[in-house]
Structure formats: structure tokens, C-alpha cells
Amino acid sequence: MKPRIGVFCSGGDSPGMNAALRAVVRTALYLGYEPIGVFRGYEGMIAGEITPLDASAVSGIIQRGGTILRSGRSAAFLTPEGRKKAYENLQKWHIAKLVAIGGDGTFKGAATFLAEYPDIQIIGLPGTIDNDLYGTELTIGFDTAVNIAVEAIDRLRDTAAAMGRLFLVEVMGRDAGFIALHTAVASGAEAVLVPETPTDFDAIVQVLERGWKRHKTSSIIVVAEGDEAGGALKAAQELQKRFPHYEIRATVLGHIQRGGAPTATDRLLGSLLGSAAVERLHEGASGAMVGLQKGEIVLTPFSQAVKTHAPLNPLLLKLVEILSL
Ligand code: F6P
Image (cartoon, rainbow, N blue to C red; front, side, top):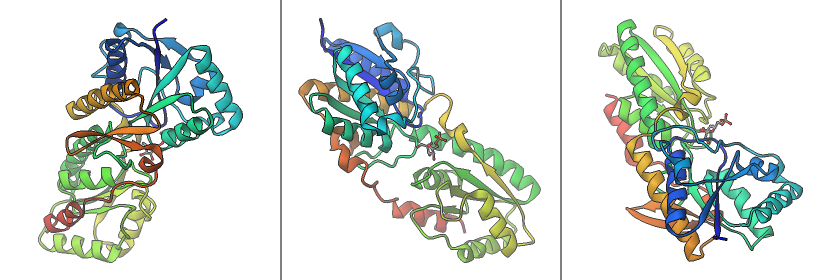
């Protein structure tokens, strides 16, 4: 029997996960392994939703959003009993090497699992739209999410300008402002609210008044879901009080940012990291995430990858302020 490599997606899905899966399966075959798919993340591992994958099982998926293995968050895997059941199922299927595609919750789970069952090897792939993992400059799905948000704001800008309105647009990111900041710069937003910096409504009112005086026809403020202002609707109410002469609307983009075809960047990243994850497993590595830094593939232990994320780029934060003139 050939040695086996299992693969699963866990946590919030992200565009490009399918490209990563395809790369994992095909690299595993290339190196002489039998690839095995685990459905619905840790939940499917516990329930035994496991099936062999061949090269054609991942045909025609590189351009598809979501994940053919499905994903999920598992409460049962947080318990020792759940993890025991998952381990027994892996044993039954002779799977000793695993690729985990997901975000911080996925890697925290993997680290606990490895501490209890060190005979398994796990390598992680950063699959999350949030870009909030330490050890990689980009996570799979981030570029697509930003592009979707920018396209949506371009549309909102048209109606905002036609009606002379201010729009507050909420993007995803419950703990991190990367999507919001990159979207704000790329869509020419007047301001951005992110969890990493204190929200200063007085400063925002100043920016809006400056624009009002020079007869700006529209204004856009991008709000990260996790900002202390409490989201776009609450921020809109707050601004309306301070700026009563402006017509204000709020739009929440929500899960729309997680669907649809991945960008070329996310397909490339998924392919590169997916393949690297299998190579690292083959070389004997475990307990770490593969990531991209300065064009190089690097391994970061799970404990570090989930602890914090890189700071927001201060140049981009400043750029929003400068370019909003
Ligand atoms: O972690 C990815 C993410 O999309 C976050 O940006 C968002 O806060 C969260 O998942 C939403 O989770 P769910 O899909 O469970 O509602």
C-alpha cells in the first residue's frame, strides 16, 4: 500500500482553497502518495467522512470558489473525546500525514491534536480571507476578497456621486483590518476604520467637512467588521449625529466577499503553497504553516502563526489620509 496524505479545509472557506487542494492532491500523487480527502474539516474527521482522491477528482476546480471538500467549524474537536475519535478514524484510514487548510482556529486545533498524538504529521496552509496569520505576507483568498470589495465600492461610488451621499461600507475582518485597509486605498476611500487603531470620529468629520467645502460629490468610508465603532450601521448613526446635513447610507458586504472565482493571485498562491505543504510533509516537517515571505516559502510553527498577525502597513494608513484631500 502506498503511504497516504490526508487533506481537509477548516474554518471559514476562502477563494483559492480549491486551487490549493488541487495542488496538494497532484503533488502527493507526483511524490508517490495516495491522497485522501476529509470532508467538512475536523467535523468530518470525527464523523469519518473520508474518501480517496485521484487526479481527476480535482479536475476543473482551480477556477471555482468555495471548496469541494466543504469546510466547517467543529465544537466536538475542542473536546478530548472528539479528537480521539478523529485520531481513530485517521488510523483506520492509515493516514499519518495531513495538510490542514484554514486559519488560526484550524491551526490551534492542529497544535492541540499533535500534542496528544505526536505520531501524526500536520502541515498547515493559510486559507483565510482575513490575511491575519503571522508567517505569511498573503493568505489564500485575501486578494479575491479585496477585489470583490473594491468592485462593490466602485458601484456604490456611482450611486453615491449621483445622489451626493456618504456611504459607509462594512467589509469582513473580525480581528484584523487588512481587507478594510487594502480596499480603502484601492477604492479611493476618504477614511478607513480598523480594529488596530482607535476610531476618531472628530477626525473623520474634519475630512468630510473638507470634502463638503470643495463640493465633493461623494464620500466612502470603509469599516472593518471588527472595528470598535461596531460596524457600518452604528458608525453611520454616529456620523449622522455629527454631520446632519449629509445623506448617509450604510452597506454591509458580508459573505459576498468569500464567494466567486479566485483571482489569479489566489490561484497561484494556493498552487504554490499547496505543493510546498506536501513537499514539507514528505521531508518530515510537522506542526507548522507554509507561507510566503519575500518570494520565499517559509515554515512558521503553528504556535507563532496564530499568536498575532503582522501590523498593518503604516504607509497605507497614511496614504488613506493623504489621498483623501
Ligand atoms: O475568518 C474569515 C471570516 O470570513 C471573517 O472575516 C469573518 O468575521 C468570519 O469568517 C465570518 O464567519 P462565519 O462564516 O462563520 O459567519
